[in-house]
Length: 337
Ligand code: PEP
Ligand code: MN
Picture 1 (cartoon, helix red, strand yellow):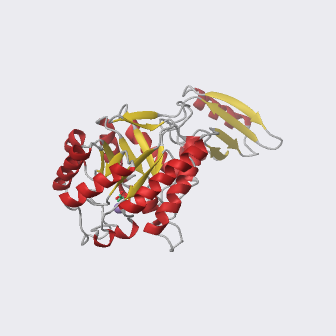
Picture 2 (cartoon, rainbow, N blue to C red):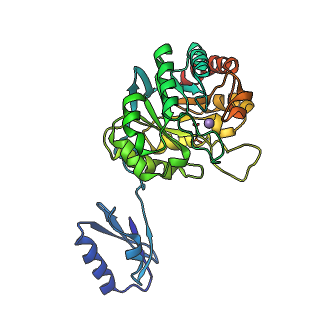
Picture 3 (spheres, rainbow, N blue to C red):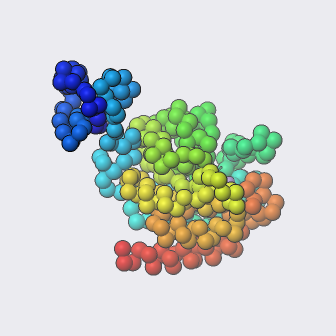
């Protein structure tokens, strides 16, 4: 942290502040510019409030130098994190694909899609049982019955399952039955939920909030990581912008930016990221080329009849083509790295 003092700050005022700060165990370094005097603070400044410093009339400005997140950041964890989840590697050079319908609808639908995406090479089956719908009048998901259908799909195909938790009420059920717990965009800043999910030790897929910055997503990841040794996978799923031609604006630059700031693996969801099925294929390839650690893709066997997000769901046929070309692209972009 750097404290910039006003040009008219007096020596006694500066000494007073120095004493106060060193009393808190901080090391203070004078930085004398041509016209400005600054104090550089080293040590744990996390408990120091910027507001209390700026209240001193002789303080001009306070600048935070360290990031607002710690556990998700690279400063104390420079190497990439990678995990093994249900026998599948995530991060650390692996490429992980999670695919399936937005919502679990019935057994025939779930089994048909799960078999198809497995055949095309998906690593995880994703499907929503508890759905966070903007309208209370839309299909809300099958809840616990949906979770049972996901378990049947896992049993029949061997694909581990990813599904969204919306309430702490179901933590025990998710701990017992789910391979990766998804925190959806709308709950990215549901801090009590993040803290509780972080305590149960199950891998968590954390989706970026609808209007969240990357730093806010990394702080949300810290809430989960504070609970212990929980594997956290980040998911870029598009953010709200002024653009209306797409449902969201898929922030592809988030991939290298997150990689610079964080050691956590990052997967990309071009389905919610664009909102249109015909944009999923090009943006999935773009995300792969930009260095994503994997993809999350909505696949439906009858998109026109889907109870949720049919307009952005691709068919198993297109998913198969996507997987073949993603594999080719991966070879091309990772060979020379
Ligand atoms: C989903 O994955 O089906 C979903 C609801 O995503 P998001 O939270 O990103 O909107
Ligand atoms: Mn969806």
